[in-house]
Length: 95
Image 1 (cartoon, helix red, strand yellow):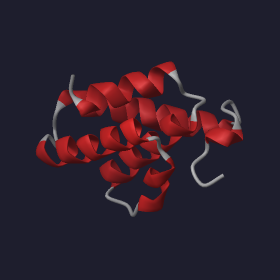
Image 2 (tube, helix red, strand yellow; image 1 turned 180 degrees about the vertical axis):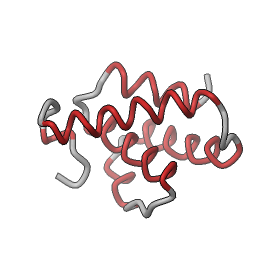
Image 3 (cartoon, one colour; image 1 turned 30 degrees about the horizontal axis):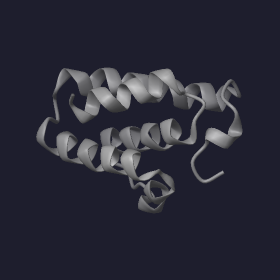
Image 4 (cartoon, helix red, strand yellow; image 1 turned 120 degrees about the horizontal axis):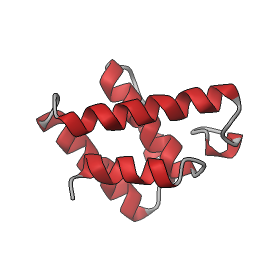
């Protein structure tokens, strides 16, 4: 399974987990071509950290791949939910 799809599934099934928030923030930063605090990735467990690295590789190779669009949409939704207070603050990277 591609990293884009794995990340999307993780975010969909565990939106209240810190790993979902970290991956979502990474996706949003990549799409917006904005800086991202790489130190946030070190808060992930080893398997999720590996997933983040795979995600970076795929993002670079598949800039216009359709799975990326779905993952980005989900990541933006999670970000919006956090701002609205619908997701516990523990899931917020850096919190």
